[in-house]
Image (cartoon, rainbow, N blue to C red; front, top):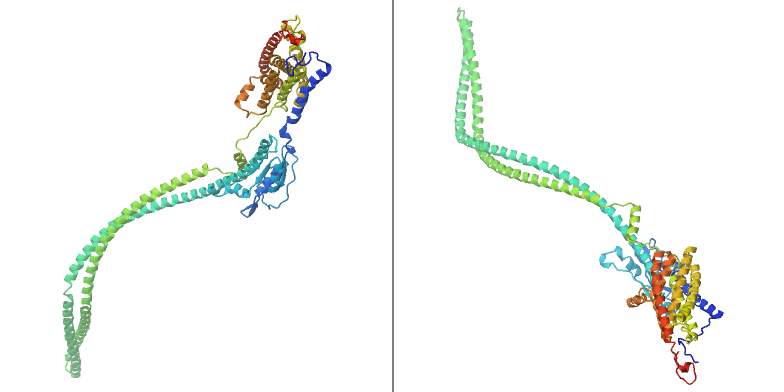
Length: 635
């Protein structure tokens, strides 16, 4: 009897010891290879060689050389943090390579070597730092119009592995994020230091505004006093104007009354001169008379006439007294004449002075009137100035108060505050990621794949429909149950073996591992029954369907960027509840595990029904498969 490959009756119904060993080793090999190769790919990045090409030209800021390209390349090679605190020459020695397994093995090289190495696969990626890197990275501290983002170029070639571009992006983004934080910290430090400077300057402005308010208040008081004084001046000059007008009128009358005084004083001078001449003449004659009288008395006294001498002497004495009076009168008359002459000479000037005084008094009256008008204007202007000065004082006081409030509102920082705030503002949001225990994210997935592949191998090694019992009287349900039972036992054994291998990577507690092993046994049993049902019902097509299910589970489990249709289809497959069950068992989530157990039992029940249908369908066989000649016999 001939058998075709992948037929439902292909293989053997007897499971020998080597077969059991091979069936046990198949999933163990799969889970071992997947776990070894993909257990923690991010922890072995040092196996990847990448190149750095530094074409950057350093810049000089405030007399300090800043070679950011060299510092960035050094941080990549050494696996450290980019430092922008110190300058230095770009000719500094290359930093030592990093021993960090989470960093690439970076090689500093030139453009030609990088291109050839990328093309040949010697380098997984090439990072090129352009010439303007330092200038662009430090442009944030200059004018806004000149601010430019610094850009590095990362290239990967066709010879690189599938996940190498993603790993390269993760490593380079970590380095650029470090540089971004350093540059932002420096920029924010300058900003916070500027707050302190602004606070000091506004404080000085507030003090000046307070002084201005005090000065303008004094100005307002002074201008108010000026207004009062100007009002008093206006009143006084008005009185002065009235007095000056009266003085001018009186002087005009005096000038009119004294206009004839020069002529009168001249006539008086002439008359007094004439009187003086007459007095002088009289004095001369009385003097002659006294002299002759004295001679006569001497002659009388020389005669012996009794009494005549005495009378003559008495007469002489009287005459001499009269002469003295006449001489006095003559002298007085001369003085009067001289005074009248002087008065007559000065009187014209006096009259002219009175006329001039009258004229000046009129001018004084006019000036006093103008002064009064001006004083009134000064008083009005001073009052306005006082009002404006008061408003200025109020405004200056408000300005001072506002500036003081501004100094209170503007924050000031100490050096330690600036350092802290700069670091926080440079990275205001951080992610605190709590990763699951080591291996919990990957090993249950690898276990599902291993058990599915183990079930596929089992379906290839065993006949899905045992032909030895098809022509017997054994009920179809019993045939299907016995065949599925053996496969389920094999799958359960595979599950326990896979759970034992996974324990080396997961490190579960004994009680949790027992639950995980039971879950893996259930998954292996269900997978075996499902693969047997697919092979029993559809033969080779069923095995292709099983391969499709395994591939879909692999793609959907490796990346969340898979097409939504594929992800949605993967949730309908038995691998989805199996993965959920193993993860729930690994974390000790009993409640989450029961729902997955129910779905797996549904798949198991459906698979048993499908196997039973396949057995029942194949109990009708063609004669040529059992009797030479090809006659058909009904079972």
